[in-house]
Image 1 (spheres, rainbow over the protein chains, first blue to last red):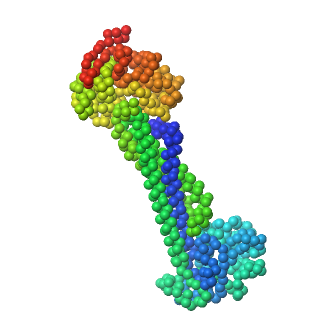
Image 2: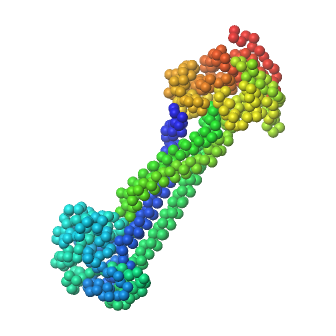
Image 3: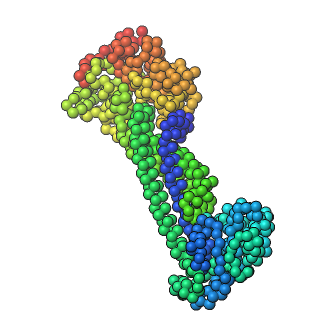
Length: 399
Length: 224
């Protein structure tokens, strides 16, 4: 037996008690680590959404709002399509205060023989685009060629693979980094590819109400020039361009942001409640256990353990137990959170982007240390009370 | 030469005088029994000598140090360094094996030494039971482990409270033989007992009644 082995020996040889205490702490760690990862993922998702939308205003056909909730297309990856004439782009550029405008065209593939997978296809104009292109350039150093596609991280297709969309063979040239939004389930191509796909879709009898051949687009992303009021530019666009609705991206994000604040508040309250409950239970548990072990501690006092050594023994035992519980709880939370992230995202209906590995590791380490500290704190009062017990009296009372 | 000198010691709990101006001395290497009926002050005396309690008044000199005036921390040090305690109940740490229960005493004294702990267990005839937990040992065996634990740091004084109170005759004889052996080696023994046979094994018996020394009896047949 080495000098540090006494607390460890007790934990190992009293497995039931150790397991019960570790499980209590594991519950605490699960709530802290799990809750924190969920809140951070939601915040990450919102930041990513803001970055990926990258525009101040989005122009969509007026019918889009009644036909499909286009916000859901961005946030949850719902497939859908609506079209307007490309001339909307030129008219938008004429509005004072518009610095940049980039078109996008949407097409939903079918769950049928003609298509490998059901996805949202988004056509971009690389020469004008300022929202998707910077993101694509992280994964693809060259420009996308005709019939090349870049796929979101949650599309089941690998680089080099050929996917069929309305019988057209498209080559996957890049797999994009996760954004935690519906954009992760989309496929991106240039406008030539999109026009080919639109024609193929028409041939398949999928009506897209295309009235002017290759000149249809679904949305125009607008960046407002510095010094101009975004609200004022938005109103001008709504007034000047008929049958088109200008939507401020901030208003889309505000909804998400409000929901996120609500979820964060709920998760924080839940974590606090679990903490309080677990701490009270730990406090009571340590109190009971240490009372039950009074004789053992009295014996140790009689063979020469000072009050400080005895308190140290109790605190070390509880810290080790807390450490074990912290590791268990954090591990369990990781097992639940990471493989099931897509399920959590769809359940929350919110952008959800996991923090990077460094942040997760830091959070996990912090949770484990915190668990050990909380367990020690819960046993501290009992340790102090115990150290004041007179060993002779304690042994006589036991007799 | 006195190892223990008790001068005019009283211990008062409220209205009750557990010890009333008791004075006695125990020489180095002596084997003394303290006898008396229940409530005579035996346990109070044992707690004061064992540095587990302090007198209300009077002096208790252990190896020249007045332990009635020392701090709790210092008393812990003195108890650890100079005294080996044995109780009627077999106070062992339930999750430690016999040898570990002996080593725990070394741990708080100096450095755990398993070989030395095994030797101490061998001395009480339990070397082969060294890896057993207390629940796997008989009462007599547990008490012998407690004796081994009390001996391991070579204390100047062995203080035993009814050490044979829960033992059968065979184990009682083993423990008393061990005490006799320790006495021969020069260890001072104070044994609190109500058993005349155990008291008869000592050199001298001090009888307490109502918190006072009623009489002292020298065992003229000691060592015979």
